[in-house]
Image (cartoon, rainbow, N blue to C red; front, side, top):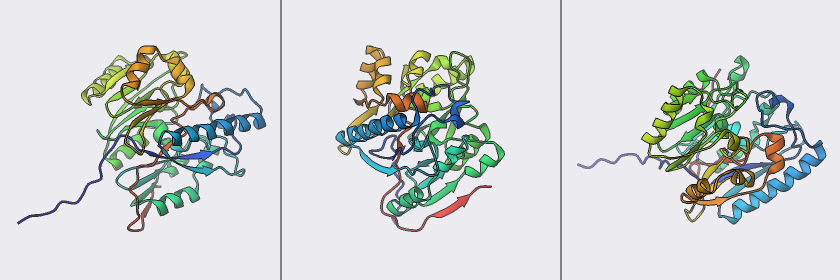
Length: 326
């Protein structure tokens, strides 16, 4: 007698499809500046928006040129959301059909969660579970998506640098829901300030990881981080704190429609790397290097922050359930 087992979704570390939000009123965001030391107010609003729009459109074009599917949503003038260009902080998608919405520290960033984008995701993909974690904002607890968490999807592990935007309890509860293990640590910049997002200092690819180990001051935490990456078979490429300032850790591994591995990092990040580091990365995939200097400088985020990965299975087969946690 033969029995059949249900088909499990194939877990992959990379995707070939991303969602991006085209800026409408991009600029320096005072709501987030207190915890993001990388933001600098260097342009007045009209000039900032014009420059960011040009950088955004060129970035989208470059990704499409390399065979990545990019779904673009235009931001709206109202409400004013200067950081809407970074959608990976408010939602994430997963191969099991889960769609998560996250609690955000910046008050005006909470307005980035858009009903129309959620509706599009539910109509385009097989969203089997929609989980809204945003009510944690009422209690001063935050977990800003794949900014707060760097996910090793194949090994079901979360790497997280704890900060005001990455609360330990929210992290624990999310990991329990999704069935991941957590490697948490504290990371600081040269001035001793917590690094606001984990994806500023590290990126995990299928067989490699980029990480600023010197930012993890606690020897035990640093050792545990190194050991976990090694145990999962990652080639570790170590960054310096100076390279992190250039957002060299803010990379993302993708693949294109032909299955070719890609690694997206900005021109500024690429210029900050050593020739040896560039060679190490190029051995794992083609380097895609958009130029986004205004977005990086005013927004304090990089190319990875602008990409919301789409891992959901296609072709809806049943309406999604909705879970709101209070």
